[in-house]
Image (cartoon, rainbow, N blue to C red):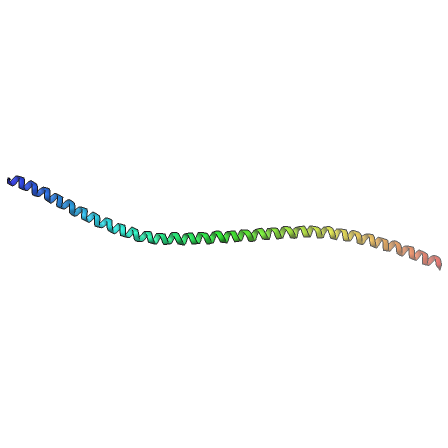
Length: 119
């Protein structure tokens, strides 16, 4: 083997050594990033779980508000119907009252007429 062949072989081995070192550094960096991502994923998993719980709470809260509003709407409709019935009943009662008062007035006139004719 000549000195040139030895130098070429040494250069090749050195290039391989440098490539291995670079790969080691890249692997170490990748491992560090992976560990960080793994830690962040655990953190993000916790955030996702918190968001899911909060989303469920909001959904249940909104559903209970909707139920309350439906009940309130039903109550208002019922009160409106009662009021309409009360208005009709009041008009009917006033009409009956007028008829009774007219009958009382007619009877009063009739009684006064009988009383005056007997005197």
